Image (tube, rainbow, N blue to C red):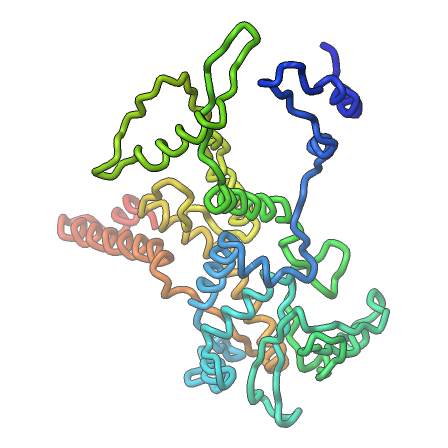
Length: 409
């Protein structure tokens, strides 16, 4: 099979010159047409645009926010050094309202979103006194404004302040740092970068292609709906010995006027065109379903769902999901992702509150979540059934030894 050298297409354009017949015109190849053969894939830029991508990409928003909301379902429990639950813990009470404008759920959701969007979450422990066990407030610092200043040393260091000198924040975005925080004041949570143990990296980098495809699909659909232009053309299908005949200016205006004014779907308009002209309808549009834009968005969404450790049964992806599938999907997401995430958050808070030094700890419990109750209810049902069976056998005169042999616990 012969190969086409697209670089020679400009030369071919000389072959497409205007013919001698005044009724026919051969279209000219534009030099810009050659550019279509040199196009490469285009992807969104991640660095510096994480927040905007999250706010304006529906699939990112719903997956990340759903994960954060599931994490916020957790309840903090304070355990003493002997494993007992500390009732009326002042730390648990404080966490219910960590700052003047956010309740516990709101605060957890925000820091979770920041971590999943930017790859880093910076929680500031505001203390009136360094000796205070409980801070005055906890604030989530926007990762886009935080600069981590390092000592330049890491692998032979054993303390945080030997690796990080300070965290500085640039609220105004002009490069002037308005506030500086000591490493002891910051709980830094991150999604590990393969090459950096200190500062995390946004998962958006790994998701660059799915994010780009989703936004391109939405953009293409928007252009089709808002800038689609003409739906099609009515062209003359008449021919003579020289070929196709174009419509005269008078014929074109007459047909156009009839088509726009006389024909339509209203009561006083005709539905069928009656004309002596030989016309052919040429559609200008292309069915979007044939481009499989919706399928592309669903497939890219699955990539995002997997990247954040959730389950596609929790989201609508163009097909129905049964209640049982949704319940199992939620259960799986909690067990595989949300509970470990809650353990990590609770462990970080325990260290910053100084609980480890006292042999105490914070835990995040999800035992009350409905989708996690199934196993407990099943176990309870089994115990009840065994107890009833034992009582039935006792009433029938069997000895305890015989019963233990028949029923294994």
